[in-house]
Image (cartoon, rainbow, N blue to C red; front, side, top):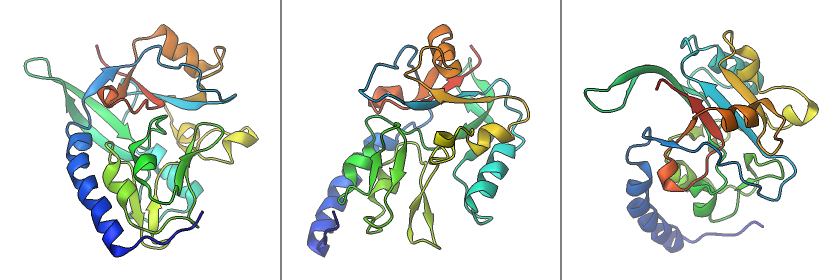
Length: 225
């Protein structure tokens, strides 16, 4: 449903957004335990990912594979790579290679803030964009507590990881999973107890980003204990 948003209405939304984003964005890389948080959502398929920070060698091949598949310009990345990222508190600080992207949250702030419902979960649990509905207000960019969205100058709309929507339904893996040379990325259906990702989540003590926010992300991390 396309709709016009007046300047006054948009400014009012923006004021509300600014006050809320401070809470959403603080400590975006604090980790929380979410093992077993794959409750049924009513969908037959609920795609998710497990990323192994221990295996990750920060080679950037996940970024390169993503860029190639989606035709991204040199200065745009759906995946952010952080080499030698520090986590924890002194004296128990750990150094990790860390990648971050859209978490395809079941309770996503970006979807809640969108005034035109241009960003939403599809039937497979993938957070996607309807560019025809997007008015370019950048509310979703500001609302995401994971800093996962980028602004596309070419499209004049926000962009992000879409779990290679369309490819995965055809039986392919996301480009980042295919490109990883050390098998640090795993993708599949979190609602299928027989899938690799479901078994990894169930059997290991995995984490999501900012579980305390209640966004219910669908990317889990294998980390140093």
